[in-house]
Amino acid sequence: MVESLKESGFNPYPHKFKVTMTIPAFINMYKTMEAGEHRKDVVVSLSGKEFLRLHRDFYLNSVLDVAEFTNLHSGVERGDIVGVTGFPGMCNRGELSLFPGSFVVLCNTLQLIPMEKADPGGDNSNVKETRYRQRYLDLMLNKEVPQIFITRAKVVSYIRRFLEDLHFLEVETPLMNMIAGGATTKPFVTHRDGLNMNLLKRVPPELYLKQLLVGGFERVFEIGKFFRNDPDLAHNPEFATCEFYEAYADYYDLMDRTEKMLSGMVQELTGGYKIKYHANGFDKDPIEIDFTPPFRKIDMMEELEKAAGLEIPSDLSSDKTNKCLLDACRKFDVNCPPQTTERLLYKLVEHFLGETCVNPTFIIDHPAIMRPLGKSHRLKLKSKLGLTEGFQLFINKLEVCHGYTELNDPMVQRQQFAEQLKDGVSAVEEAYCKALEYGLPPTAGWGLEIDHLTMLFTDSQNIKEVIMFPAMKPQDEPAPQAQSNNVPVNFIGRQGWISITSFLVSFILGMFLISRFFGI
Image (cartoon, rainbow, N blue to C red; front, top):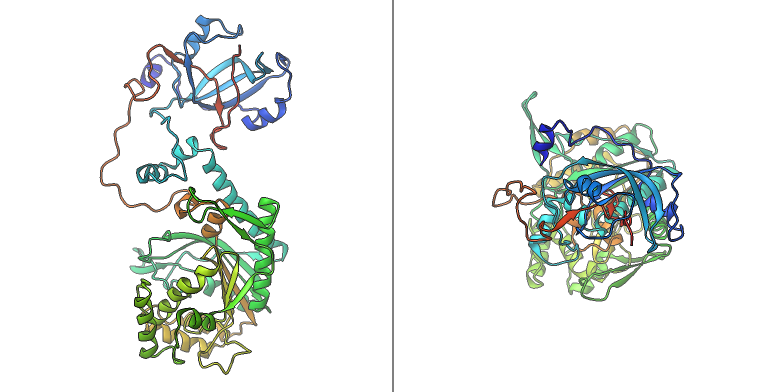
């Protein structure tokens, strides 16, 4: 079809079409017209996708006669992007219509668009694979999907606005360097040919951000992508977070800011403090999650020992402690690679404490082995466990946010990094320690996982639902060849049917029904 149009001298892909308003705006402006009312003095140009086929003998409005209509639409296929210029009106049935004066195909589709919707909440794994690999089809066919990403954008926008209102400065730090950052997650390795050197993709940006506070900034934040090379398939290897660092603050201040940010965000998105979430599947009743501040707080080590029935040795760096925690993980069937003491503690906290956190809950006061960049707890200095001032925020049994009072003693920081090295997790970040020697003021640092938070606010059970193009395994078979529109297909046949633009669908906002061009 496209080739024949080109041979006839017609351009099937015009350079431009002036759209005077969006389809939702058209509906909103003219939806109150009376049945039979026409506004011929108004000229409107709309664009959208051709999605519906109607039978040839369908009644045609007298604006176009049958011969003219057939000639105009005989080459239009379902999925073609079309532009229509005309005047608004209500047909006799009371349906909002655009009575066309001109009609142009702006882009011919070379693939037949599926008729069947792929339900985002469905269990068909093959359908899900197609939705994630071909997100453009997902956006076309499922009106719920664009709303997910609109909500995600609102979440990011709210975070940025909240921090800027508090006079935080948004900054950018390197995505690649010789060190990955201050986290214990395994990084991705890449290579720079020009210098013949390996580089690591960052995990968090915190070491850079805190160096900015050494330089004199007092409040900085960064929203961006970070990377983790974990065997845990529950996470996307590329994930979005927000981190901020605030001078002259501590983790109590961070918990207060967290409560205000998240409760305010829920209010702006929903009008209240409570959301519904299908934690047990769409076939079960949703649970209610209440973001009303203040959030619950539980002491990590105290509650973990109670819940797991453990007596954790005071020397957390000892082999005895590692064996104690490893035995507990095996007893309760908690899978934990790698089996470092830090990771074992994390997994046990998730298993025993995280499972109790449906409403937002702060799990506070972690051991230093879990927070090598955190400052010793001022009220628990005599604790044999070496506790730090830090928290994890769990919502619906999932960690969403964390923060702590930052360690700013360069000598102690070097020692903590050396302990990490013994676990085979990360090298000593000497450049950061050198920056600390110039003086880091009392500081608190905070991080939020945007993907996990978006899952809650969009009622999504799979993290792939909230990432535009999630990481996928390679397909076993090559993609099928493009199918011509002239090949018979297993939905609405071509015999005895013609394609008319009965409904225009806004591609961006996901298949808004606009109305019929012609009425009865």
